[in-house]
Image (tube, rainbow, N blue to C red; front, top):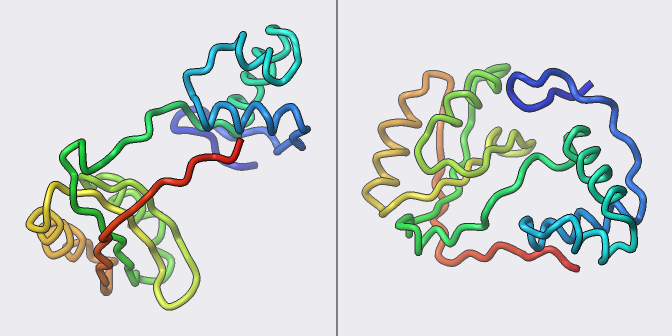
Length: 161
């Protein structure tokens, strides 16, 4: 069984999603603030059915939460970078916990290939990025090496609805 959010325990086995579930997911990805009524009308089910389906999607861990899409530059974090890390074998869980604590860390992935971890960070400026890489990341004993890829321009893709 997959692990649930912190303190929740294991998630139930994944259930197949039908076309209505898929439509609900697309709608909530486009507008996480959509009302139950508008979701029900759009996918042609009752409000009770829409409410039950959304609750099941949350309980099953399909929907991990609701949040805002942030323009990082407008929020004072105008420098973004992907950082690749090579780490000590079998240290992923330890490294992941330390990366979660980094200011501006927004995405962490264990990957296969020439490096082990891909980290996306957003910082106020290049000086803060430099501090994060040279002081914080390279101080983690399990991190063997890093490579920083500065992002010149980025765009979050909107869900296709």
